[in-house]
Length: 266
Image (cartoon, rainbow, N blue to C red; front, side, top):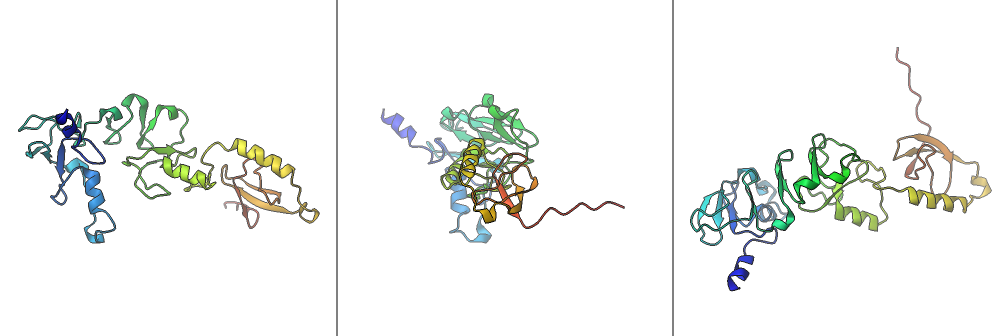
């Protein structure tokens, strides 16, 4: 029993495993790449010295049981201990918590969690998505190869859950929930509706119908641009919102004038 408790103590807040890594970039020893990045890529470090660990260049690990430094391998060459029940020789990655259902995606070039049978790799987007989105996701080239538009953490290898919006842009799920808690329902990148807003638009239809504008405004017309379908329209002004006649969305913004006429090519 005491031995089991001792084994559980190996690892760090990010992973349970029985080895540490020697960072190829700075030569220092850390529990994992996240521990390295938190220490070496933080605001407390001078800009010139900040760096992240190149995970695929890790060559040496240290057994947490016998302290033997050795090449990357699943079992310790000295004491024979399994350094990680899940081991990926391509990513130099170890983890004892196999309940995460880790798998290596050759398309992404890194290990992911959730089970290979539940995900597919989209070559155009350059990342893995749940099979639920197989025939419905909107492709955006290199969709996750950028920072979250809310918290600015790099999305591609983030350990947090990621959501693909209707427009195809990606964002941390917790950041999306934070936006919704502040009544923000548009994609921070392209301003399209981040989810199905049809029920909200129907409710807004009822509120507009129940709130007629004063007589002096009833003939006032304005130009709007729809953030969802991109259509420019001339509609009646209303204080509650302006509905796109093309797609029925209220996710619109007022423009100063009518769209410029296209010039004929000579």
